[in-house]
Every structure is written in C-alpha cells, then in structure tokens.
Image (cartoon, rainbow, N blue to C red; front, side, top):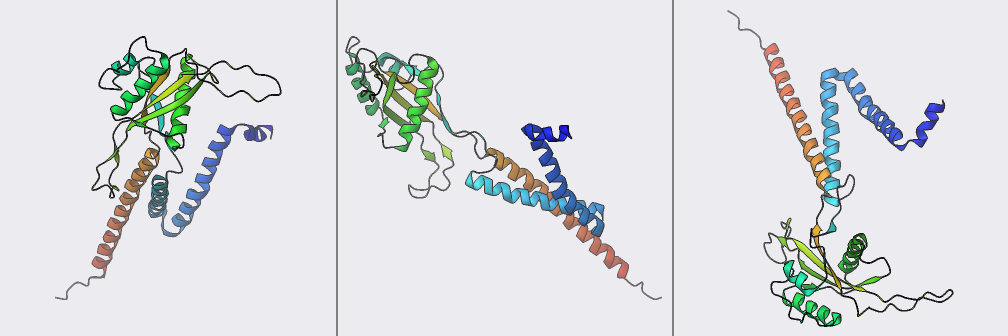
Length: 273
C-alpha cells in the first residue's frame, strides 16, 4: 500500500502508468468488443484503423493550429564567433555592412554609435520602433547574450536600438497572395546595447532615471532567427498515422473483395448435363 501511495510523488512513474492504463482501457476495450463480435483478426484490424484515423485527425489539428505536441519555438540565436561587436571595424569585418563605417577611429563613442546607425540604415537595415512587438523580444534575447558573455550585468545596460534585415517569405504569387510562401530567407537582428552610469540607490526613494555612459563603447549583438520546429512533431504523427490508416483501409478493402468473390463462387449452381 505504501508503494502504491508513493506513485503520487513520482510524476514520471505516474505518467507512465496513466498512459498504460488509458491505452489499455481505450484500445483494449474497443478491441475486446470487436473481437467477440467479428473475430480477433478483423476486430484488431478495425480497431487499429480507427485508432490511426483518430490520431491522424488529431495531429492535423495540432499541425494546423500549432498546439498539442510541439517542437522548439522560434528564437533568436547569436551568430557564432561574431555575436558581440564592439567597434565600427568589427561591424564591417562581421559582414553586417558591406563597406567600412565612415568614422574616425578616435571619435567619441556617441559619434561612433551614430555613424554605425547611419551605416546600418544605408545598408538596408530597418530600425524598429520601441512599440514594435519584435523590439521587446529582440531586446530580451540580446540581454541574455550580453549577460551570458559577462561584459555587462542586469541593470548596467539598456537596449537603445534594434535593426532588422531579411526574413522575407517566398514563393509568392503576388504581394497579396502568399498562401504558398512556406520558405523564409535568413532573418538577422542587430541590437545596440548602451552601458549605463552607476546609480546610487537610496532607501525609500524611487531609483533615478537611467543615463547612458558616454565613456564606454556601445555593444552590438548580432543574432539570426532560428525558426525552430514547432509543428514538426505533429506533422510526423499525422503522416505516420495516415500511412497506418490507409494501409488498414486497403487491407479491409482487399478482404471485402475476397469475401464477395468467395460468396459469389459458393452461390454458383453447376450446369445440368
């Protein structure tokens, strides 16, 4: 009894037992009813066809609406070896822009940041507004990269600008007809991260407004969009269940034709001499 009660504290064991019991009750009871009425072999074939058809319809709903068993969600991932860029030279060498940034090497850091923003705009990068839904997601991903690198900690920086490029869908029949555009071009993001001046925290007072530190260079987080595989598990289940369902339906069709042929041969009366 103590062992049975301990199952409630083991989610893995409890989940396995629930699946086994549910599968046995659902599939086993259906097979038992069919087997006692039309035979074990035909009952098993019908039960398997019904289960595969139900799983196919369920997986199609999962696939269409992106629910149920899901894969990895789309995320922003840093570009390998060029994830954090510190100066205009690094921006050009990483391939973010096609020409060197026109700014003096000893220019103040705010001037370098302004020159980099102009160069990004001239090279086809689109600056996102803070009200854009992609801005917050990109800024959050950039913060994770910055903090993981260890150069800046939470509260020591602010994402001031986000630049977007690529990500177009294709093929398109026209700009308004794009229901066949299942493919995507690579999608990049450059997030401009500015260090903040240290703040003095006083008990009982609201923190002062964050101010950018003009004595430190801005960091540029270079990321690419990973589309993930959110609908792949549902698609695999749908295809696999469809194969099993149509195979069972074909076997049932062959059996029905064989039964009809055998009955027709048995009813034939031999010709009298």
